[in-house]
Image 1 (cartoon, protein in one colour):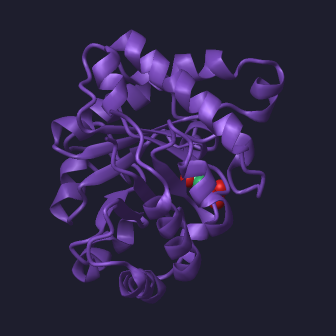
Image 2 (cartoon, rainbow, N blue to C red):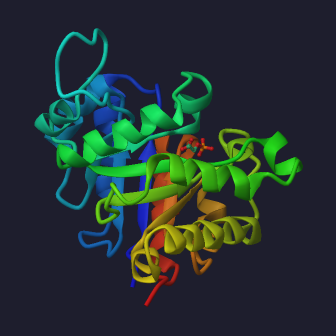
Length: 255
Ligand code: PGA
């Protein structure tokens, strides 16, 4: 069975005091053994302080990393540095990094490999733009993004894929559960083609894009939706706890 994974991507939000208070408020409402994975992804500069208040029932990751281990790369952060301050995960290929910061498939592959080599686990994000969906290109885009960063030279044991349709991120327009399920089933099928059926069956695939407490359980109740990558709604403890509750209530997928 696949364990659900609910992750809060804080993006470039909060201040230090609010970051620590948010973790404490989530902890206060979290069952001691939630039975699902719950993670927070604070901005780089707050990671160490968040690690100091992080309970054992939660995990922490970063929103990005560089692909070199060290050296003259002004402003960048190496995967090992993230481990050093308590990260066990890193998000790679978020649509804001692809479309606002111009990260290419080639760069993302290097980042995935560097993060895994450093012993971090990776949430690799994929998702189509509205224009691509309207032009019936969703599957073409997802296949390309999967193949750009994953494949024979990347083992998937420590990789989660997040399907985040760009038109649903921060817009309040959530994919319907049926649209999410369709894309997730397609992604799982692509992974089966690229690796094999048993790797595909084990792979956690999160949905992201305007997930809220009110739609979380239905989305995560889809057979191929194994969790949520949450932006805006992860900044409010009550809302995020509601999403976690939805994940706990939704049945686990897989064999
Ligand atoms: P959102 O963002 O929940 O605010 O739509 C999701 C994400 O970008 O990970």
